[in-house]
Image (cartoon, rainbow, N blue to C red; front, side, top):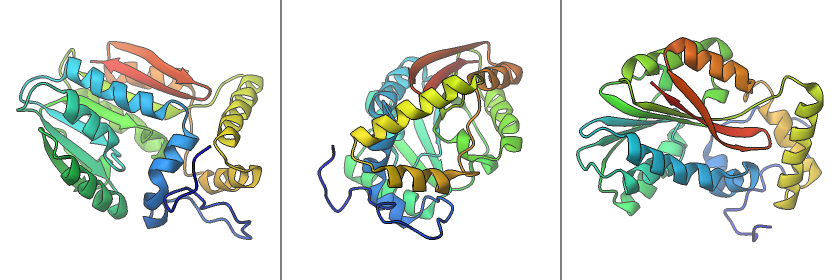
Length: 246
């Protein structure tokens, strides 16, 4: 269980009459590292391995895109391991609060790779000279109708042998398995100090904001966009990460 500090996630600790839609505002930014580590099983491993895989696949002189970068964890993982000093990371998030805090953290870290932070909608970003693209628990927050287009655009921007790293919360086609995996995820959160009320209220806040899809849907979309290989490299409960090779 996490120690109680000023950066501990207590957003949903008190009962609310009206629960507003979840957003990545200043309140969430203040507690985000604690929130994500206590809510997403294996998050630290996923971030670390993004760096490992980027180091393997990044082409010299290319751009690495961290789309929905939040506080820049994946950006810093890539910057610390990619050996090509002429690579550039483009980190994009639509939350002004996230970008402001990410800029502070990245400035403090002084990465050896150039990092271009942008506050923008990832659907509006032009992808240039890309070799690695990261959507680390990002696609799930886009409207379902916009997901195919974004993945197709990313595939078109990558060359054969380049990669897209896609991490998502998923749902299962079998209702029994879906219920089981959600129950296990909630048990994980309880073990990390969240109460049943906190779990319930956050789940309500995320309804129609985070819309999960099945693994089969993700695989079909990636292959239809032009990725030649799609592999699950990490999974825990209803969270997984894929590497899609162009």
